[in-house]
View 1 (cartoon, helix red, strand yellow):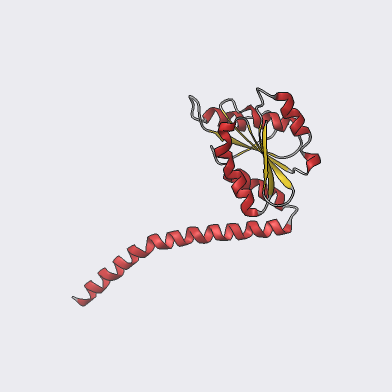
View 2 (cartoon, rainbow, N blue to C red):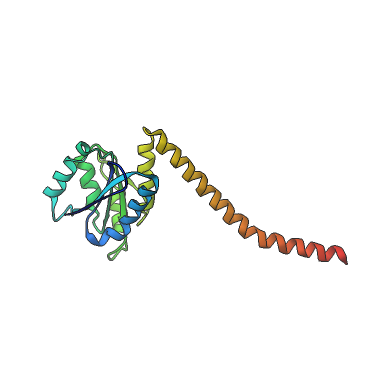
Amino acid sequence: MSQSSSAPGQARVAIVFGSPSDAQTMSKAGATLERFGVGYEEVSISAHRAPRTLAEYVGQLRGRGISVVIAGAGLAAALPGAVASMTTLPVIGVPISGGALDGMDSMLAIAQMPPGVPVATVGLNNSTNAAILATQILALADPDLSLRLAEFKDDFERAAADGLAALAAPADATADAGASVGAGQ
């Protein structure tokens, strides 16, 4: 088990992944949580190779102040479901691409949990969305975090609108130039 902790304040989110090879994909969740000032811890524990270690880790989460778990896994993707089976904390699964089915197996394994063991599932390799969803869950009881999320959404929308305006500007300039040429004839 390898473990690290980041971001200011006490960790509120646990980022768990099944293999050190998943660290790069899952690091985007940490970077997103840092953007919102949400403390997190990050650990690599295999549900298949270290089930007792995983059970011990999950059993201690709530006592350490963790409120949400982001669990990423590829191939059989047992980790998110295993974590969800051991806790009442919300679990967000991140399917990671790889293997013969390039992640579709992990996507289906995480999304198709049995009744009573829910795992919210984001898109393939999309640990950024997992972190945003975790932040939205935390923001339900944190007005300051809710404001930071609202600002993020406003900035996101503004950037999209600016991008559309930039695309439209050359077309408008061409149309205006053509209208001016036609008007002078």
